[in-house]
Amino acid sequence: SNSCSNSCSNSCSNSCSNSNRRTIINTVRNTVRNTILLTSLPPFLLPQPSLSLPLPPNPPTSLLPNEQLLSSIFTATIPSVVNIDTFKPIQGMNSTNSLNMGEVALGTGSGFIWDSSGHVITNYHVIRRADLNNINVAILSPKTPSNDRDSEFKRTVHKATLVGYDEDKDIAVLQLPPLSPLGKKTAWEAISRAHGSFSSLGSENSIPPIPLRVGQTALAIGNPFGLDHSLSVGVISGLGREVRSPSGRPITNVIQTDAAINPGNSGGPLLDSSGRLIGMNTAIFSTTGSSAGIGFAIPFDTLAYVVTMILREGKVVRPALGISYLEGSRARVLGITRGVLVLDVPTTSKCYQAGLRGTLRSEQGITIGDIIVAFDGKEIDKEADLFKALEGHKIGDSVTLTVSRSTVKDSKDSQDFSTDNLTFKDIKITTVLQSSDVVKRTDTKVAGAIN
Image 1 (spheres, one colour):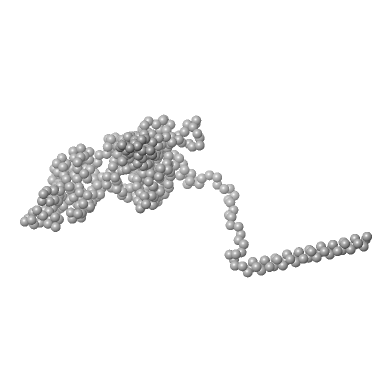
Image 2 (tube, rainbow, N blue to C red):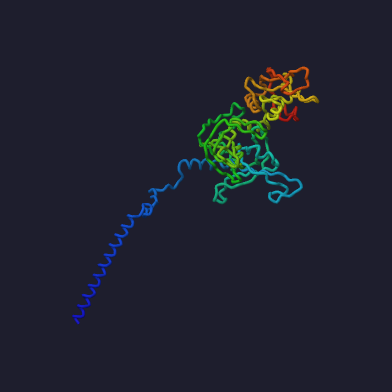
């Protein structure tokens, strides 16, 4: 019995010792093999350390200071920014895609509440083809405590009427119906915070300029592609730009920005980093119709002057020569390469009394009229130059026009009125600027009038 027990014990002990020895040998052999294998591999096949970055000890739970500023400006301003939908009546048919039968939606744009009386400012081109009795304006009104609290504001839609417009500056003024006191207060506070009170804006000289610099932050708020109350941020890219208005006249001193402006943004406000209104988004330069980083806004001082005049007079009245002109491309067909060709001088105009001559058409041909080549000493090459010169004057100002007047070279061929048979001589004519309203009332049939 003892012999068997000792024999089994020795056998088991030897077996376990051999097994442990083999395990150790195999482990060492595998370690050496793996080490040799890894050292022979190229670096990019070797195991890589973890790329996860350690989190900061206290991750930020709030917005950065710049983000807080942008968010607060947006929140404070959106009650005064509106969405404008326009419609056009269709004769003899029903439209199933519109809220009202017999109408078709023309498009959407933006605008903003100007004062506590509910006047809304937008671009004229936003509403020019619309049924002026059917302009929908959507605004954000603050919710009462009993409302759903998921959002601070609720969206309401109102019918607006047209107060007046200035096609030459692409500005229109609409009138909202009476708003609730709470809604009116919030909208007025937002727009007042942007540009201050308008009680002192009685003339062009009383409009306080807002100094702007290229590189400063610009915020555009509007409804691009119908996405209401959208914010885009950029910088002022340029100043003193020029764009063409719906009437063909130039709009000068325009602001250029790279803040994204798309279809639907027209009429919305452009703000600076203090939340002040610095312009109204108006146009883009793009080959695709969408934002290419080149947008334009009508400056605040132009807005204030035009809107104040519309609200005070019901219309915009400018100094005018009281004449009509031939568009530049058509004048070039006649061989006129510089200046503005006078087409017609109504007998009621001051220019007629001063001796300015228009272009005449007869059975024998065309008699070239006077060509305006300078205005108070400033050279005039095209119509835009003449418009700019007029903007610096007031009704009743006395101005001096330098005109190039033609005479026939060959008296034997007095019926040849081509520019090859004409000689031109510069003469000066002094006249008085009239009211554009007088010009329109006395000669409403003259197209292309300098008014």
